Image (cartoon, rainbow, N blue to C red; front, side, top):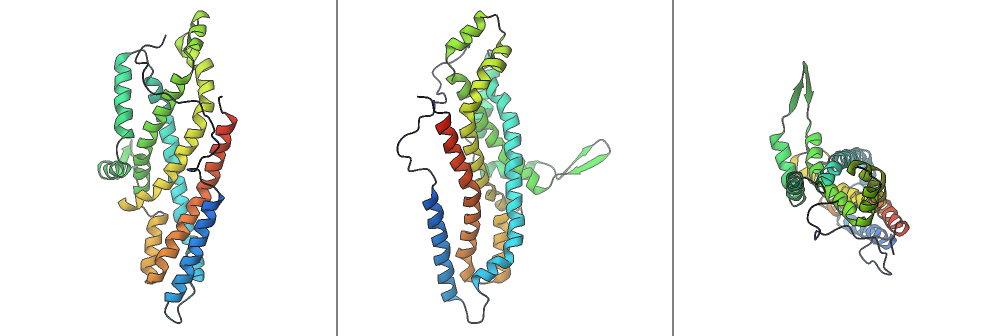
Length: 276
C-alpha cells in the first residue's frame, strides 16, 4: 500500500485539445525570419557608407557563434543527464513509505524547484572550487561545468515532480493486484509501475529539456563563453550599432531551429500516448 497524502496533485493523463495556441508552429519561425530580414534591411539603411554588408558580417562570425552554440547544447545535454539521474530517485523518495524520507525529499524538491535559476548559477559559481583534488590528481572545474551543475539542480527538482506525479497517476488497483501476487514494493515499481510511467513522463521530459536549452544563455551572466557571450563580444569587436538587432535575432533563430523539432516531437508523443 502507498502511505501518505493522497490529495497531492498528480500528472494528469494527456488529452489533446482541438486548439493549442501556446504551441510553436511554422508561423513562429516564419515570423522570426521575417523580423531578421526586416532588421537587416533597417540596419543596412543605417550603416555608414563603405561598411561591410550585415549578412556578410554575420556569415563571417558564424563559425565562432557555432562554437558558442555548441557549448550551449553540450551544457544542456550534461545538465539534463545529471538532473535526470538524480531526479528519478528523488521522485521515488517522494512516494516512499517512510515519512522521514518523503518529507526530506519533498523539501529538497520544492527548494530547488522554486529557486530562481540565475541565483542557483551564482551560488554554484561562487561556492564550488576552481579545482578538486582526487588522490594525487588535480581536476579543474571550469566555469561552464559549474554552471552546468547549477542548471542541473532545478532540472533535478522538476524531474522529481514528474516521477512523483507519474507514479501517483497509476491506478491504485494495480498496487493492490501486485500485492495480491505477493510482489514486493520494489518489484511492483520495477515491473509494473515504472514501465507505465515512462510514456507519461517522456513528453514533459522533452519539454523540460527544451526549456533548459533556452535557459543556457543565463550562463553568460556568470561569465561562460557561450553563444550569448560571444555575440556580445562580436558586437564589441565590430563596433557597429546597426548589427545589434540582427545579430541577436540571428542567435534567436538558432535556438528556435534547435528547439522547434523537439516541440513537434513532444506534441507527437503526447498524441501517441494520449489517454482518453
